[in-house]
Amino acid sequence: MNKALRKAIIAGNWKMNKTRPEAKELIEALKPLVKDASCEVVACVPFTNLETVLAAAEGSNIKVGAQNCHFETSGAFTGEISADMLKEMGVEYVIIGHSERRQYFGETDETVNKRLKAALNAGLKVILCVGEMLADRENGITAELVALQTKIALKDVSAEELKNVVIAYEPVWAIGTGKTATAQQANEVCAIIRGVIESLYGKAAADGITVQYGGSMNAKNAEELVAQPDVDGGLIGGASLKAEDFSVIVKAASNG
Ligand code: PGA
View 1 (cartoon, rainbow, N blue to C red):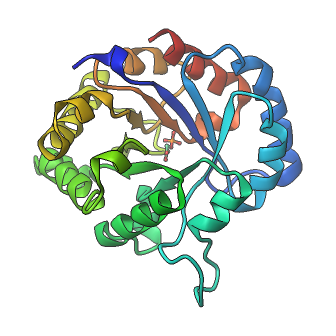
View 2 (cartoon, rainbow, N blue to C red):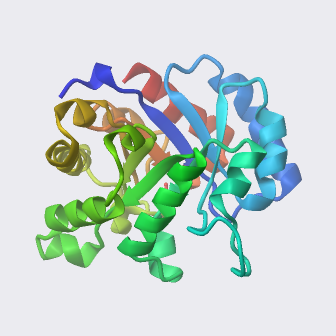
Protein backbone atom coordinates (compact mmCIF):
# COMPACT_ATOMS: atom_id res chain seq x y z
CA MET A 1 0.00 0.00 0.00
CA ASN A 2 1.37 3.35 -0.98
CA LYS A 3 1.79 5.70 1.94
CA ALA A 4 2.44 8.68 -0.34
CA LEU A 5 -1.15 8.45 -1.60
CA ARG A 6 -2.65 9.63 1.65
CA LYS A 7 -2.27 12.37 4.17
CA ALA A 8 -1.00 11.89 7.68
CA ILE A 9 -3.11 13.53 10.35
CA ILE A 10 -2.01 14.31 13.88
CA ALA A 11 -5.09 15.02 15.96
CA GLY A 12 -5.10 16.01 19.60
CA ASN A 13 -7.92 14.64 21.72
CA TRP A 14 -8.01 17.00 24.68
CA LYS A 15 -10.76 14.95 26.36
CA MET A 16 -12.29 16.74 29.40
CA ASN A 17 -9.41 19.15 29.88
CA LYS A 18 -8.79 22.92 29.65
CA THR A 19 -10.85 25.92 30.57
CA ARG A 20 -11.26 28.58 27.88
CA PRO A 21 -8.24 30.69 28.91
CA GLU A 22 -6.12 27.53 29.10
CA ALA A 23 -7.39 26.43 25.69
CA LYS A 24 -6.47 29.78 24.15
CA GLU A 25 -3.03 29.61 25.74
CA LEU A 26 -2.39 26.12 24.36
CA ILE A 27 -3.43 27.03 20.82
CA GLU A 28 -1.35 30.23 20.90
CA ALA A 29 1.67 28.21 22.05
CA LEU A 30 1.06 25.56 19.41
CA LYS A 31 0.59 27.83 16.39
CA PRO A 32 4.23 28.84 15.83
CA LEU A 33 5.47 25.33 16.65
CA VAL A 34 3.38 23.55 14.01
CA LYS A 35 3.10 26.22 11.31
CA ASP A 36 5.41 24.40 8.90
CA ALA A 37 3.83 20.97 9.33
CA SER A 38 3.30 18.97 6.16
CA CYS A 39 0.79 16.72 7.92
CA GLU A 40 -2.67 17.88 8.91
CA VAL A 41 -2.95 19.19 12.47
CA VAL A 42 -6.25 18.95 14.35
CA ALA A 43 -7.28 19.89 17.89
CA CYS A 44 -10.40 18.06 19.14
CA VAL A 45 -11.51 20.07 22.13
CA PRO A 46 -14.39 20.12 24.64
CA PHE A 47 -17.62 21.70 23.34
CA THR A 48 -17.17 24.66 25.69
CA ASN A 49 -13.81 25.48 24.09
CA LEU A 50 -14.87 25.30 20.46
CA GLU A 51 -15.61 28.98 19.95
CA THR A 52 -12.43 30.07 21.74
CA VAL A 53 -10.26 27.59 19.84
CA LEU A 54 -11.84 28.39 16.46
CA ALA A 55 -11.03 32.08 17.05
CA ALA A 56 -7.50 31.36 18.29
CA ALA A 57 -6.73 28.98 15.40
CA GLU A 58 -8.14 31.25 12.70
CA GLY A 59 -5.66 31.89 9.90
CA SER A 60 -3.37 29.09 11.13
CA ASN A 61 -2.99 25.51 9.89
CA ILE A 62 -4.67 24.09 13.00
CA LYS A 63 -8.05 22.53 12.23
CA VAL A 64 -10.67 22.26 14.94
CA GLY A 65 -12.69 19.22 15.95
CA ALA A 66 -15.23 18.13 18.56
CA GLN A 67 -15.14 14.86 20.50
CA ASN A 68 -18.68 13.57 19.89
CA CYS A 69 -22.03 14.52 18.38
CA HIS A 70 -25.58 13.21 18.58
CA PHE A 71 -27.25 11.36 15.72
CA GLU A 72 -30.40 13.46 15.57
CA THR A 73 -30.33 16.94 14.06
CA SER A 74 -32.29 18.52 16.91
CA GLY A 75 -34.88 17.73 19.57
CA ALA A 76 -35.43 16.55 23.12
CA PHE A 77 -31.97 15.15 23.88
CA THR A 78 -30.89 16.98 27.00
CA GLY A 79 -27.17 17.50 27.22
CA GLU A 80 -26.43 16.52 23.64
CA ILE A 81 -24.96 18.49 20.71
CA SER A 82 -25.89 17.89 17.07
CA ALA A 83 -23.59 17.67 14.10
CA ASP A 84 -25.36 20.64 12.51
CA MET A 85 -24.59 22.78 15.55
CA LEU A 86 -20.90 21.94 15.18
CA LYS A 87 -20.87 22.54 11.45
CA GLU A 88 -22.54 25.92 11.82
CA MET A 89 -19.77 27.03 14.20
CA GLY A 90 -17.08 26.23 11.66
CA VAL A 91 -15.94 22.98 13.26
CA GLU A 92 -14.35 20.66 10.69
CA TYR A 93 -13.78 17.32 12.46
CA VAL A 94 -15.57 15.20 15.02
CA ILE A 95 -14.33 12.11 16.86
CA ILE A 96 -16.92 9.33 16.81
CA GLY A 97 -16.89 6.10 18.81
CA HIS A 98 -14.00 6.83 21.13
CA SER A 99 -13.52 3.91 23.51
CA GLU A 100 -14.27 6.15 26.50
CA ARG A 101 -17.70 6.88 24.94
CA ARG A 102 -18.18 3.15 24.39
CA GLN A 103 -17.02 2.21 27.91
CA TYR A 104 -18.61 4.94 30.03
CA PHE A 105 -21.51 6.32 28.00
CA GLY A 106 -23.20 3.28 26.51
CA GLU A 107 -22.00 3.84 22.96
CA THR A 108 -22.52 0.76 20.77
CA ASP A 109 -21.41 -0.09 17.24
CA GLU A 110 -24.96 0.80 16.10
CA THR A 111 -25.00 4.24 17.72
CA VAL A 112 -21.49 4.85 16.40
CA ASN A 113 -22.85 4.15 12.91
CA LYS A 114 -25.77 6.54 13.47
CA ARG A 115 -23.55 9.31 14.82
CA LEU A 116 -21.03 8.84 12.02
CA LYS A 117 -23.73 9.15 9.36
CA ALA A 118 -25.23 12.22 11.04
CA ALA A 119 -21.80 13.86 11.12
CA LEU A 120 -21.16 13.10 7.45
CA ASN A 121 -24.63 14.36 6.51
CA ALA A 122 -23.84 17.63 8.26
CA GLY A 123 -20.63 17.96 6.24
CA LEU A 124 -18.19 17.15 9.05
CA LYS A 125 -15.10 14.98 8.73
CA VAL A 126 -15.14 12.01 11.09
CA ILE A 127 -12.34 10.43 13.08
CA LEU A 128 -13.82 6.99 13.74
CA CYS A 129 -12.22 5.14 16.65
CA VAL A 130 -11.99 1.37 16.80
CA GLY A 131 -9.90 -0.90 18.99
CA GLU A 132 -9.83 -3.98 21.18
CA MET A 133 -9.79 -4.40 24.96
CA LEU A 134 -6.89 -6.26 26.56
CA ALA A 135 -9.05 -9.40 27.02
CA ASP A 136 -9.88 -9.38 23.29
CA ARG A 137 -6.21 -9.29 22.41
CA GLU A 138 -5.44 -12.06 24.88
CA ASN A 139 -8.27 -14.12 23.38
CA GLY A 140 -6.79 -13.65 19.92
CA ILE A 141 -9.83 -11.88 18.48
CA THR A 142 -8.33 -8.44 17.76
CA ALA A 143 -8.53 -8.75 13.98
CA GLU A 144 -12.14 -9.98 13.95
CA LEU A 145 -13.28 -7.45 16.52
CA VAL A 146 -11.70 -4.44 14.86
CA ALA A 147 -13.02 -5.58 11.47
CA LEU A 148 -16.51 -5.91 12.91
CA GLN A 149 -16.39 -2.48 14.57
CA THR A 150 -15.22 -0.94 11.29
CA LYS A 151 -17.86 -2.68 9.18
CA ILE A 152 -20.76 -1.80 11.46
CA ALA A 153 -19.62 1.81 11.85
CA LEU A 154 -19.50 2.20 8.07
CA LYS A 155 -22.82 0.53 7.30
CA ASP A 156 -24.64 2.51 4.57
CA VAL A 157 -21.71 4.88 4.09
CA SER A 158 -20.93 5.46 0.40
CA ALA A 159 -17.48 5.48 -1.18
CA GLU A 160 -17.87 9.21 -1.73
CA GLU A 161 -18.75 9.78 1.94
CA LEU A 162 -15.82 7.59 3.02
CA LYS A 163 -13.47 10.30 1.72
CA ASN A 164 -14.47 12.30 4.80
CA VAL A 165 -13.69 9.46 7.22
CA VAL A 166 -10.42 8.91 9.05
CA ILE A 167 -10.04 5.77 11.13
CA ALA A 168 -8.10 5.75 14.39
CA TYR A 169 -6.94 2.39 15.66
CA GLU A 170 -6.84 2.73 19.42
CA PRO A 171 -6.20 -0.42 21.47
CA VAL A 172 -8.11 0.29 24.68
CA TRP A 173 -5.33 -1.19 26.82
CA ALA A 174 -2.94 1.43 25.46
CA ILE A 175 -5.09 4.51 26.11
CA GLY A 176 -3.87 6.68 28.96
CA THR A 177 -1.94 3.75 30.40
CA GLY A 178 1.53 4.55 29.13
CA LYS A 179 1.47 1.12 27.46
CA THR A 180 1.93 1.81 23.77
CA ALA A 181 1.34 -0.86 21.17
CA THR A 182 4.63 -1.75 19.56
CA ALA A 183 5.12 -0.19 16.16
CA GLN A 184 4.64 -3.65 14.68
CA GLN A 185 1.36 -4.26 16.56
CA ALA A 186 0.06 -0.83 15.54
CA ASN A 187 0.99 -1.37 11.92
CA GLU A 188 -0.49 -4.85 11.86
CA VAL A 189 -3.94 -3.72 12.97
CA CYS A 190 -3.90 -0.55 10.84
CA ALA A 191 -3.18 -2.84 7.86
CA ILE A 192 -6.09 -5.09 8.87
CA ILE A 193 -8.39 -2.06 8.94
CA ARG A 194 -7.12 -1.01 5.51
CA GLY A 195 -7.87 -4.54 4.29
CA VAL A 196 -11.45 -4.22 5.56
CA ILE A 197 -11.78 -0.96 3.63
CA GLU A 198 -10.43 -2.68 0.53
CA SER A 199 -12.98 -5.48 0.86
CA LEU A 200 -15.81 -2.98 1.27
CA TYR A 201 -14.78 -0.16 -1.09
CA GLY A 202 -11.92 -1.37 -3.28
CA LYS A 203 -8.20 -0.74 -3.51
CA ALA A 204 -8.24 2.98 -4.34
CA ALA A 205 -10.34 3.73 -1.24
CA ALA A 206 -8.05 1.56 0.90
CA ASP A 207 -4.95 3.29 -0.47
CA GLY A 208 -6.47 6.70 0.14
CA ILE A 209 -7.92 6.39 3.64
CA THR A 210 -5.99 7.79 6.58
CA VAL A 211 -5.58 5.22 9.37
CA GLN A 212 -4.12 6.64 12.55
CA TYR A 213 -2.74 4.95 15.63
CA GLY A 214 -3.75 6.17 19.08
CA GLY A 215 -2.84 5.06 22.60
CA SER A 216 -0.04 6.60 24.66
CA MET A 217 1.63 8.06 21.59
CA ASN A 218 4.12 10.63 22.79
CA ALA A 219 7.12 12.75 21.80
CA LYS A 220 9.46 9.78 22.30
CA ASN A 221 7.65 6.96 20.49
CA ALA A 222 5.84 8.89 17.74
CA GLU A 223 8.62 8.75 15.19
CA GLU A 224 8.75 4.97 15.08
CA LEU A 225 4.97 4.60 15.06
CA VAL A 226 4.23 7.09 12.28
CA ALA A 227 7.05 5.68 10.15
CA GLN A 228 5.13 2.39 9.80
CA PRO A 229 3.78 1.79 6.30
CA ASP A 230 0.13 1.58 7.35
CA VAL A 231 0.14 4.18 10.14
CA ASP A 232 -0.89 7.61 8.86
CA GLY A 233 -0.42 9.75 11.92
CA GLY A 234 -2.00 9.59 15.34
CA LEU A 235 -4.79 10.47 17.72
CA ILE A 236 -3.07 11.88 20.76
CA GLY A 237 -4.60 12.23 24.23
CA GLY A 238 -2.28 13.11 27.10
CA ALA A 239 0.58 14.39 24.96
CA SER A 240 -1.72 16.79 23.09
CA LEU A 241 -2.11 18.88 26.24
CA LYS A 242 1.48 20.09 26.07
CA ALA A 243 2.36 22.26 23.07
CA GLU A 244 5.99 21.17 22.98
CA ASP A 245 5.25 17.43 23.07
CA PHE A 246 2.43 17.68 20.55
CA SER A 247 4.62 19.66 18.15
CA VAL A 248 7.33 16.99 18.32
CA ILE A 249 4.72 14.42 17.24
CA VAL A 250 3.56 16.71 14.42
CA LYS A 251 7.17 17.03 13.27
CA ALA A 252 7.62 13.25 13.34
CA ALA A 253 4.55 12.83 11.12
CA SER A 254 5.73 15.58 8.79
CA ASN A 255 8.92 13.62 8.18
CA GLY A 256 7.45 10.09 8.34
P1 PGA B 1 -3.67 8.80 25.17
O1 PGA B 1 -5.15 8.90 24.57
O2 PGA B 1 -2.75 9.36 24.10
O3 PGA B 1 -3.70 9.65 26.41
O4 PGA B 1 -3.39 7.37 25.44
C1 PGA B 1 -5.42 8.61 23.23
C2 PGA B 1 -6.89 8.73 22.97
O5 PGA B 1 -7.68 8.33 23.84
O6 PGA B 1 -7.32 9.22 21.92
